[in-house]
Length: 142
Ligand code: CMP
Image (cartoon, rainbow, N blue to C red; front, side, top):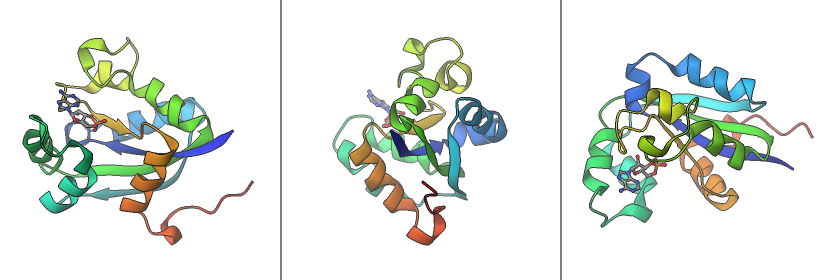
């Protein structure tokens, strides 16, 4: 089934100048970019996005990192987009990420792991709405 998922190119990957390289991975895997923008998160925005992790030992470091520079946020559409995007990214911890995945190639650490992707359709819906108004996302054609 055709799905939509939410994706972030994190500050370390933007700083490495690999936005296009990462977008090419999505496109080569058959995922279409149906919304995209660059944003520099405030602490409030980053804390809200990662609210489910509040209280975890890595939370403050994660917010520091995610507000350290601009990010790209995008909506990806395609067959099994949630799972496919997670395959393209590789494991959250780059030490466990398979060769050829985004995290294997562009992560610097568990926190600076280059990309974020929704872990479910429910998360995708919430995360897309957190960053995009309805009129900022391409209408569905199917
Ligand atoms: P992300 O998919 O953006 O979701 C939460 C982020 O927290 C995760 O990627 C990691 O970059 C970061 N993080 C840092 N430490 C941990 C940890 N111990 N477990 C899970 N996520 C962590």
